Amino acid sequence: MKPSFFQTRIEYQSDYICMLAMKNERKNYLLYLSRLANLEMTFSDVGELFKT
Image: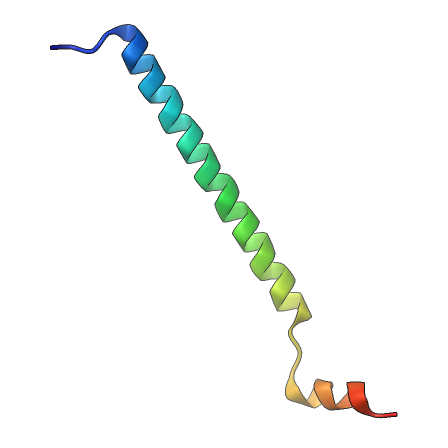
């Protein structure tokens, strides 16, 4: 039996919402990784922090 227009439209809308959520999660995760990368430092730089 062929689904009605309403059922098809709801399916497409839910697919769109899921894809949009996944896209935003990916963007947020990449921003998080970027922030972590900016906070990283080498071991030689860590020694300079504790010098008085």
